[in-house]
Length: 303
Image (cartoon, rainbow, N blue to C red; front, side, top):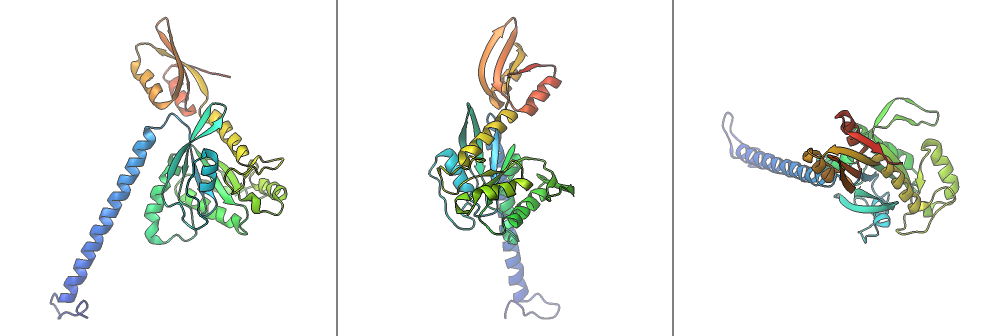
C-alpha cells in the first residue's frame, strides 16, 4: 500500500518508490538496447571480414529443421532438438557445396506467429544475418498441416524487414509477385510424408524450384525429382556460380589498393604480371564486377 499512498499535493513514499522503479527499468532497457547494438556491430564487423565466400541464411518457422539442414550440409555435430526456439542465436559454418565452391551458411532463430513483444528486438537483431546474406534458404516443415500459413508468417516478417516484397499481383496459384532476395524454398521432414513425390509436385505448383529434404541429418533420402540434401547442395553450387563467377581482372600494377581489395573481398585463385598489368583470377561478387567495369577495369568472365 505504501507504493500507492501519498498526500494531496505531496510527494508520498509510494510515488517515490514507483519513480525509482521506473528509473531502474529505463536504465535496464537502455543497457539491453546498447547490448543489442553492440551485438549487431560485432556481427557486421565479422561479416566484413568474411566477404570472400558467398553467404546464405537459413530462415523459417521455428522447429522446421534449420539446424538439421546446417548439420547435414556441414557435417558438424550441432545441437538439434525437436522443440520451439531450439536455436536462439545465430551459428555460422562454412559448407562445401562441390565444384570447388563453398558457402558461408548461417542458422537463425525460428520465426513464430505473434512473437511476444519483449522478444521482438532480440529476434530482429539475430535476423540481421538474413538481411546481409546473398541467398535465403527458407526451410519449411513439409509434414506440418499448416505449413502454408507458417510460410506466410515468415514472409510477412521478411516484408517488414524490406527483404521481401509481396507486391500487388499474384499468380494463379497465389504466387508472390516479387522477391528482393534470392530465395530457395526447402521443404524439410520429407521422411514424415506418406507420399513425398506427390507432395513435391503440389509444392512446385507454387514454388517451381522447391527442394525436398529429410529431417534426418546425413539421410540418404532422395526422390527421382529431388535429391534430398545432396540436391540442396547442388542448388547451392548453382547459386554460388551465379553469385561468385570466376573472372580474370586486369589491374594496373600501380593500383596496389585495388589488388589488396580483391584479396580482401574475393577468393583469389592466381595472380600474374605482364607488361605492367596484373591479371588476377578470382571468384568475385557479381555486383563487385559491375563496379569494376564502371571504373574502366577490364573484366573477363571465365566460361
